[in-house]
Length: 185
Image 1 (cartoon, rainbow, N blue to C red):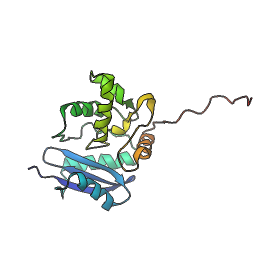
Image 2: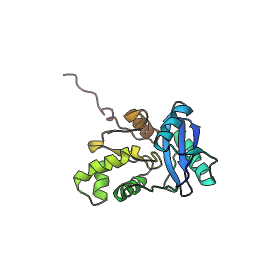
Image 3: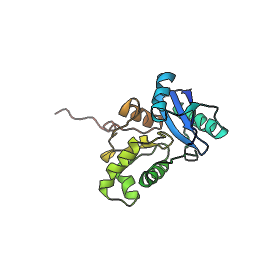
Image 4: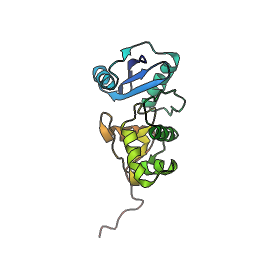
């Protein structure tokens, strides 16, 4: 059985949690307002994990997360993950999501098409995003519903948190202000 260790840490966005094993990062918990609630959420999915001293790679990932929530443009694509136990199609979905850069978005359907699957696979992409074990590192918040709508988000704060994360990256989801005034008829 693989040993999992974890760390709860504070960011400008709240308290986050990260878990890892000797292969890579296995879980990431998006921020909540308290260290206790973050720890409970993380351990709900990884109950056998124990607090540990992070390796240099994990400390670097923690630093990148802190910089992200401070509004700095960062790239998580080099963070080493362990996605053992994930279905092969989900792994392909996660790889596609990791290619979505800072300040960019795509849709569930676009990822399905990129993977050569039909429109019905958009629902599978949505399921993969909802079950993402390392949200933010695999940037599921950058994947939107059809028509650029926010869609769901299973992290604390739901779609409001997703919108805030996108706003940190300069993504505006509301319609632009009208270019001219109406005539008031």
